Length: 178
Image: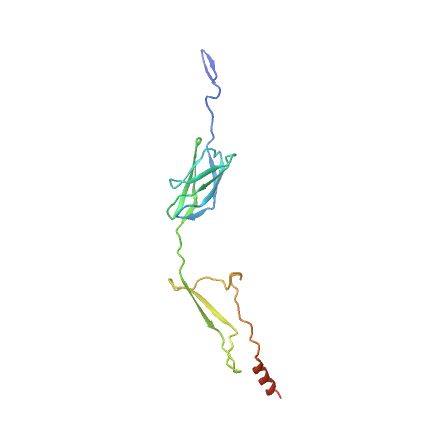
């Protein structure tokens, strides 16, 4: 409504206030430098949003009907923290700290060395009651953190069962005790 000395005029629907967006978080908070990570950005007043990460536009931007959540696919980026900017007709909101592009880590080849910790040669049998194993990164030549099996909790080890005597060993023991 505009009021002057000459009178008042109202023009319904001539102006609509659009609130500025707010952003409160992004998940996941990291992804590869190649991009392609599906992220969810939360906030308010996100209707009509576009999303950029370090100035590069995200793709497949979808805003929920309530305007409180955006899903988008990250563009390629450089290793490090990327500012996430959401722009709507009401303004701009930025998450400066919250998404990290990670460089792709190339897996290194490893070698496995198994060493008996105790060798028992008497009675006439070879017995390995304990076996130690070291998994070594062949590039850095450092031990690699590993598990003894895919289902074993970290820090556990495996030892072979004690051998059962063969029939020959059993008969030689029983004749020795006669």
